[in-house]
Length: 386
Image (tube, rainbow, N blue to C red; front, side, top):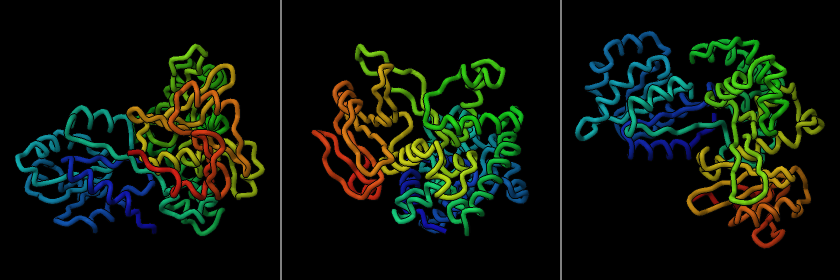
């Protein structure tokens, strides 16, 4: 088990400022383990309810009666099983002096997000927990993290085959059981076929019509499938940035399987040699580095974009916070160079900086406001957002 000290520190800080914090993430990403780490680090009384435990469910038959006397930190795990508790949390969060802080854990199912935001508006703060990151596992484990992904049981498995076996089991359970618990009524076989097809389009611009033709359904139907997987945090939609320029710009999102290990499981990639020889090598690397960048930068999803024009100029990642515009290109190469696309993006988007993340171990300038950053130097040379 790896201690996720930075995540513990972040969530404890959020709890000091907000009466209710929702820790959301994909199933099996380590939310419950992190909550136990927080209970150990919290200075004060801690009460935990696991809503998959029948005895804890019985204790919460009358939520107000059970929760009102408590003080300190109250952890409610698997909160999506009892969304009727949210109105009680609103009442308790509004008490003078706020004697209790609530940490609720759940997967980011649409029903959970909708009910909690409607009931606890202005009282709840959402924090998304992803899989292991390079800052947690160390740069020496970069290739292993890329191949296996960040789910704890996949990354820490005793062998590549054991890791792949876990990821395949996760995919099956997620499709056959978890989505149904979230109220999704799409057949598991249909979602499996869609998710696998999406893996083959990883890193490409979303084309609803092409997917719809393959499934024999309407564009809106396949878009619904994509939104389901995005809400469950197993896919990422990177939205396009629209600059005020005369060039025609791409308006559809780019789609990624959020965890590189799940991508490789869907593509039946077992070993590093399999990955190095696969047609999706470059796209897999791009998606992996984007996830590591966003975790390191501390960027929110609504601050992250890609940019592309119909005449071929493009930018892998644009992070906008306030007046700051930081851009990133991701290349699976040992010798990065400045391209016409980079020059176009630098000029058209009025970028502050453009970093080219490449498969190396040095950082050096390529051009004014453009530098190459080796992946092994990401944590040292790329500054987090302010």
